[in-house]
View 1 (cartoon, rainbow, N blue to C red):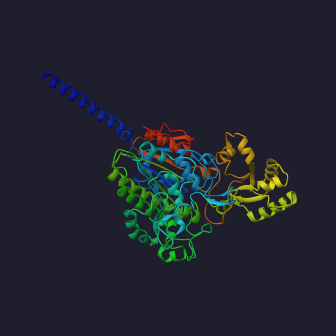
View 2: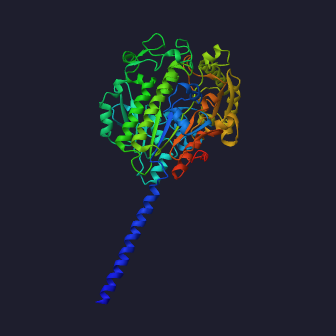
Length: 555
């Protein structure tokens, strides 16, 4: 009997030890994924075409709950720049989330010439993907051309797929590239006669019920209303006069002046697409982001989720009306209100102090050159037609044919390398000859060859920025740099793309869980953002990251 009792005691002890080990292992495994030190939700905000000085220009008109809340409660990196050229939307979004530059992640433009297919490709275009939520080809998109991971991808890998990632933007590329390859979903707005949020078969086979319900509601339609200034227009002293010759405006309205009847104007301006070029496009984006937080349960447990939101309307408004317009000022004042209600919603649903937000831009923008010129600031427009005619004449005279050049786009010249061989020429010699020819043209400031970019290391100046944007497999044979404030664009509205301060200097704000309160004038660069968030989460940096974590930001 005694032996039987002893055996029972021993078995009980082993059973207890086994149970204890199982419990401990479970806790250890869970603790890797769940930690009270990590935010429940990371919200990345990219404001398309936001110059840094918008923060300071419009500061007195902002409320306390949007931009100023981030500044007053968080950390403000005042000297934040892009460290590459070109400063376009696709490369910008990719660089923010991958922690590197086009040299590594491969998104060298919004569109670029593909050397293999001999045609233009779109940064998010994917012929193998199918549209979800529309019959239109607008959903044939994926991140397959981005060659590295984002911090959102790394969070998905770290949490064994338990941490969700969702990307949202009016623009497909603004949703797709930040969300990365492993995202649960990316949604973008398809306007025209549909006015709905759509996606791609890269993520799903059909839209979730909550998205269908949102699309079936009157959200988009409700914003087809009058756009007038949020406050009395006479108080908008931080921008130029409402009626001027430097703005584009909308078809169907003679003058680019307030107010705008969006419902009436939508007929001549691609239907619901008109919303993209008004502050209501941002409001619609905020509405959809909050719907996603609720429906997807983002930030509702201790395993970190990522929400990537890009406010794109600012870019459309800037392109149309210009940096100094009343329309741009009103758009930012209204965006400030949208940020406030988004943060208040996060306070309520995720919990104040339980989420982390960063806000930056994908590029800045130039003041309208015709406006600068009117103030005697050197600025103007590149005459591409004349430049092309002179260049073709040079090619004919030098090589007997202009077909030695396959494509000219994004300030890059692509050579037909088979033609170069056929003519018995050395590639580097042809590059050098074309570079010297282009350098003699009006408003061309600098010219560099692909051979130089691939063989010489630069550690400062515009050359360094060009090299960070140069991808040996994808970039051209000759790279052009135009004079300061000279652009290839129409005479109204603003654009971007250069390595000059008006395009590179953008905001970088952090606030929320794990973030110190403070500010710095020390230079930071866009690729620092992803490593900083990765360090905060304790996860691997994106696999191609070249930026450094900003330790002074983390509490």
